[in-house]
Image 1: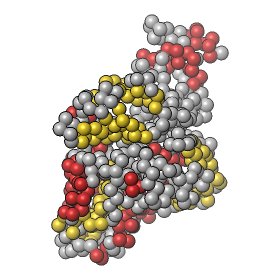
Image 2 (image 1 turned 180 degrees about the vertical axis):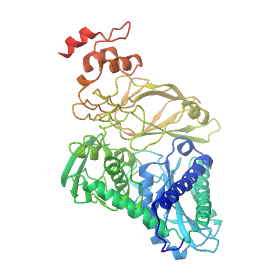
Image 3 (image 1 turned 90 degrees about the vertical axis):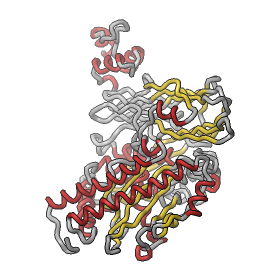
Image 4 (image 1 turned 60 degrees about the vertical axis):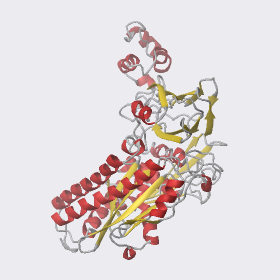
Length: 566
């Protein structure tokens, strides 16, 4: 296919699906070769293919918006540092620069140029993964600058003409508490891009594509047009909302105004809190990532996520605000606030698009890092993710213990316990944590955790919603607040790193999502089913839903319910 060949719709659909298969193979290779459960179990990664100009054409079906959408914009920084005509086969580029990629040092982005057999650059593959450790204070919010948060790797060559940059690998390994899985995952990122490149070249040969540009232009322009059509259906005007987070030293306000004019949107986060002195700040690239994701969810979820879908949307936030933090502000816990952004946007659009939004959910994932010493004095560290419930939707209940907007998966207790001296004593749904409504919010979970090797240990608390619950919509009630309590009775209500004696245990109560519509509208039989399943207590069924459940049979007392609901 030449550069001027016009693509008919059938051919385009075939090529598109094959291209998606290529990036899915890239992501699968990354997950299968990863050394950590962060990637292979939780899916905290992104994978995508770009044309030679740095435009993202397609992404893998797995991956988080904070990685995918940030990676879609970050490749232009790579090309500014290493222009395409300076690259050669076997080159691989890497960085964890928070301002230019996905917002904190724990995420490595690896970009690989792909060359044809004739030595012609045909595109790029990129992926982003969360590293188990990056040195510094560890994964927490206590640092007062990015310099305290770990090793900063500027955009540089990881491989040069097929030869690894051994000095860089040595430097990274020397700065990590767990060098083997960190270096192992970087190698997995390189391999994944190579796998994607091999499949891409096979794909291009099979369909006689001399270059990706005609296909990229068609995909990107169609995506842009579809996104513009979806935006145009929203009435012109300004849509505003405010949400609050626990913050660190003080509560944080996130204020948004969506200005819709014609087929374009400007999303302005002016009015949000100023930059924090602790590691909860968000860089603009990450703010852009979760803003564009939320808008696509509400307006055009069926449109492919690529360069075209971003073009009609402009995202702005004042410099030195908490959503446009400037170097060297600490940013390690940037996801805590970044995951609140879709809820803020949905709240702004709720009146205009009540059928297209979710009530507020737990928002941020709880990234839990436990660290300590082994019997031989060596250090161990382990990170895993947990989440509360999503908000209810206008047609169905929220989803329990499911990450939205990140999409991160939980890790089975058996896997955690096999890889670190950690014991999970209890892990179950948190009864009554879902916000009541005609459609109930998703439940959070309760988890009791301790360490088994008899040594003191450290816990990094990256959580939220201990003060501001997930709001319900259209008469729905809020979800339950988060609750963290130690086995000695101490309640933790502030972020930060804490050291514990060997026998200390933590009980984590993750928050629930908000409900949708009044709980008085919920079908009594649905309430009874929730009681049977242990999701709602008999007391909450009566007091919050107006449904009387016989405690012996767990069936609805129809007469008593009718009287209570009068």
